[in-house]
Image (cartoon, rainbow, N blue to C red; front, top):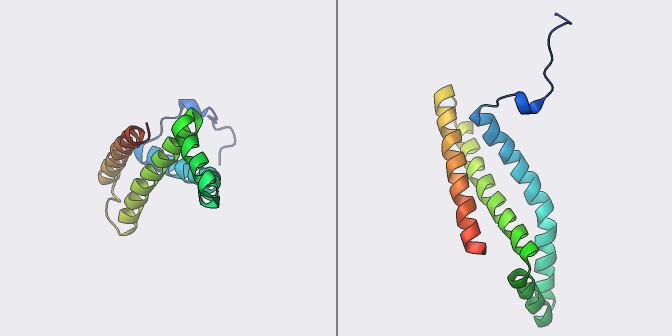
Length: 125
């Protein structure tokens, strides 16, 4: 093995293929859902506590820009994560494993994810 081979550690200069981008976004949305569940469990607990707690949770989501932003982010992450998960299940079944069909599946997933993010934004705002 050549010890003097060039090493490129600047990730901004490496062009990732679409299937890699799709897979990385799937992982990122999974982490976002994990940590976003803390906020949603807080809101659920608040709403189930009492009628006053429910009204406070409703007011939080209606009046707070930050709460709406978190809700939009979580719904968007959930939508993309589900779509990418379906793509991975299809690939696990033996379909779309070739280079061209893998690229097509990644394109479809990214486009459907963008549509899901827009629809989530319309729903939340």
